[in-house]
Length: 193
Image (cartoon, rainbow, N blue to C red; front, side):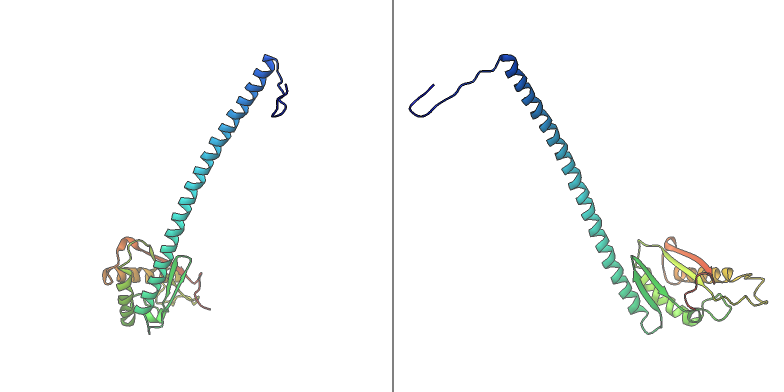
């Protein structure tokens, strides 16, 4: 059919072919809708996971800042005492040499050790969400015969010392006993050569 504006073409499909094409198009639209809903669900799951990751990162950053602040407070409290303080991967280490806390072969905290532990306890008592492990270490020199009845090996000696430090931190330093843990490594995890 021709007009002044242009040429129009009309085509006619048999009714069955038109229905088939319409049905196929509707099927494709339904498939696209289902895929779109699946993608929306995946996107929402990704957003939720991202929100959780952001929260975890924020918490980790806050924990790291808290640890750095705690290391600074411990260093300030123990300045000039020869104590080594380190902070690594969320764990804070305070290393005290044996003679600072104990007389040779003894398990009772000496006077110098009491002063250091009192200052350390003043900081540790302000912490309420960490476990404080006191680990005892010894050298590999065998226990003297006069102490072997009480401490058959360096394990018993290191554990007794750690226990006495824990007790002092709790009883004199005011640290919550539920946060304290004593362990003894004897000579098997040396902190020095």
